[in-house]
Amino acid sequence: MNQALMPTRIVTTCGNVLFPENLLVPKPQQAGFTDIGHTRIGQGGFVLLDFGREMRGGIVLTTCYPGSDDLIQSKLRARLVFGESVMEALSSIGYKNATNDHAIRDTVIDVPNMGNIRFGNTGFRFVKIEAIEGDLVLKAVRAESDIDERPYIGSFTCSDERLNDIWRTGAYTVALNTGEYVWDGVKRDRLVWLGDMHPETATIYAVYGADPSIRRSLDLIKNETPSTQWINTLPSYSFWWVILQCEHYMHTGDLAYLREQEAYMEVILQRGYEVVCQNPTPKEFDFFVDWSSNADRGVARVGFYAVLYKAFEAARHVAQTLRNDRLCALCENGKQRILALALPIPQQKQMAGIAAVAGIIDPKDANNTVLAVDPLAGLSTFMGYYVLLARAKAGDTQGALDIIRSYWGAMLDLGATTFWEDFDIDWCENAGRIDEIVPEGKVDVHGDRGRFCYQQFRHSLCHGWAGGPTAFLSEHVLGVHIAEPGCQSLIIQPHLGDLAFARGTYPTPFGPVAIEHTREGDRIVTHVDAPEEVSVRIET
Image (tube, rainbow, N blue to C red; front, top):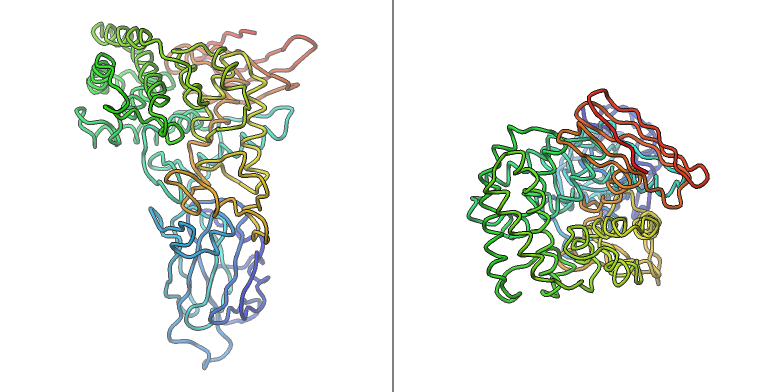
């Protein structure tokens, strides 16, 4: 049964609205004859409700007896406007790029007298209910969540409550985007984008383990894309498919499934190898990795080769398991050809981060010359995950934790309950909160900001790729590294930075592994409780 949520507050009303506060009182969602405790919205008026947090689903309206037979209306219509921010819920289609793309968030519906009606399948926190034709007499309004809000298997708690809030927010962001498939966003981009999925799947593994939605998404794209074409029409997205398949094997140990992907994987990597051999210029080839690097094709080229290198390395490892000497040699040769290009350190954080993580540039050099310079400037919620990983790889865990607190934390300071498709720290200047009507003289951070194809209200405020800090805190601070397929062997290597302690659980196919690190003077004391099928080596 869908989870029901009551509105938590009335943001505002307009026109002839009587007793709006009654909508905050829990009542049976059953139409009846009594007019006690109802809310009346006169024609042309509206009420704007806050349900307290971002959710995925719709709302149910329960209308009640209007008070006398002559008030029963033959035609009753309401306009519903869903919003991830207050200002989006107060917008109309076309205003500041407001849209119904992918999910209807602004519509007019027929409403029954003395009945229930459910409408909506989108991402939202706020809903404006407007009486368009006739007076709306509402007994109750509730939101219904369309996701299975199951308990998390993974967990994370440390001595900094802000980091704890951020871990939970990243987990919830991804939970809303995980269902039959792994989506980018719940309002817009309800699609399987392979090039965007990696930070999201890393978070899913940290929260739920090997959720079936990952495999379904990988299969969907493979079945829809002949191996002679690029996944999602982009070469780098095909290489991410290889990386995701290899990581799926490490988390599940499902060798039979891996063998089913072997031929498709080999074709993709052969095509990637041919790209390296040709070494095309940016004008001749689509080196797209992400929007933030796309304007500088030379920078994007470095990031592209980093993703391909990472795919070669991941596939080389599983090729040994598959005893595929041809694939193993292809991957090793591909890696060497990329290294022979002697690619420069890109002067852009996202591409410097992925290049350092892949191993085609030195992480410490990247950190000293790019990543740690004005560290919050030029970040993105998507590729920011690789900036965190690169800074950790350079030995700068503290720098990564500071970014999480200041950059992802700034979204929480603006009222976010999920993490956004994009964010720039400069957007905070003179910005109003997303859970308030923006005061005169303040900036509407949702309606006035955004970049690329996600500008203004088209911008998604719940995007799965933004959950990277959750994965990072579990992987790097708790220090979980999968050493053998199926999580049969783990290496635990804590990195606490300035934290006094960190504890949590990490999902495996055999059950969660419980980990606790405590700082005692100059050393870290670690305790691990793992299922008997999982061997653990602690490295400090």
